[in-house]
Image (cartoon, rainbow over all chains, first blue to last red; front, side, top):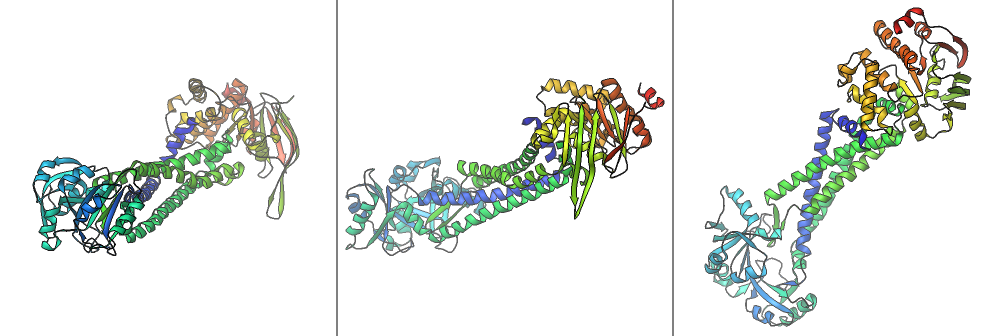
Length: 385
Length: 238
């Protein structure tokens, strides 16, 4: 089988410009496809999060700016069966639907952040954060993005101003959940007071961590029932469902992006098939000569198919590598309603990209390879150029 | 039994509403080691007969037995495998693979046979030596002259030590001097190696170099002469 590998590889260099252009076309297509995959994966990570975390929001409110729950609900919620821990959160965003570049402040009890999140500080210290009211820890992705936007490196000790909120960076963190790196965690009291005294005693939402044995739906219903006749009615959902409903319009857009990804793969198939057909038509006589000396039609089929798969594979590999580099270095994300979707590279994205490339190579190469294998030898020798 | 036994072979094909019959119940027997030339005007069926014996075309009726194998009954893939070990084909135009070196072009038929890399290397070197092109082994076809390309084509045809070597106007696209050199090489293959040779030509001088000369007219063999090659050619071949 590999005896003909030099022939296949040399054939690909026969028309270098054509091969290079086709590889480039495949790379661009797979890059876009991987990008779409990264967006979908980012969304899936948000909307299919652990069911054991509930978000309590004000009923009939959809924007963090309009949800005002009493902070003391924290104590009532914490006493309910199945509840392990309650984290009151004041949310502040730099804009509400005015732009997709949303910066989100989460004001909460500083000492709880370390406990309920998987954050790892890459610089700064937890003590500095926990002991100073006007400090914040900032996600690495946000730091990189804002540094690029501001044109200067954000680092520990520097002040960061978003809207009318200014904090001192006490730490920069990374998280397994890439979307978490798009937030700023600061002190609850600080965020309540810095934006006027109206917010003191209220929070945007309570994040409720459940015991492993608790039924999330049951707890959510019990919780809403408890506050039905309270000061403010609540609407409690699992964190995944809550985030999905916050991003409903973006989800629809992202769903449409899927078709953009498929369209790119379709174009890639057509491009590869066209190039392979051209290659086969150029070599009708050569394939006839090969068959005359004893190469079987099946082998000619495999040779042409191999050429197509190799071009597709290397193009796809290049596209995947570009996508990985771009996604890893750009810290891209979009946000709405205080929820961010992070676009991050992943093993599954890279594997899918490479596999899809190889499959497209096979799909695009079958018809031209069949044509080459079935060509009449005598006619090809007599009439082909 | 003859090495090549063509029995009442008919070849027909349709060209629009017309049915063309390039071969009509042709019979031919060729013994091992013979050098046979096929002469005839254009459309007389000589190339068709050559292609049928080489197994790259199918006859409409009749049988062709080569070295005991009835090739008319073989499937397309079996026929390809049979060609790999039994037929060496010398084309009119050189038909080398342009992206492969002379060495790699000559090696191609051996890739289809179950032989080791070292054995392949040995055979390719012998074939290239036979056509006096060892020093051009790493040259690509574009770096070779027309005559050198044709010699590579001849080396490719003989490298697998086939049962029969067929040549379709091998000197047709060469200048007179180069054509003469190629012809001498072909004669040498037959005389030195005992290769069975079938050569199609429209040139009486080339045909005369063969030990047996056949003439086809309208798909029928009308002349079968066993003649001595011309003295000058024989002497030069020696």
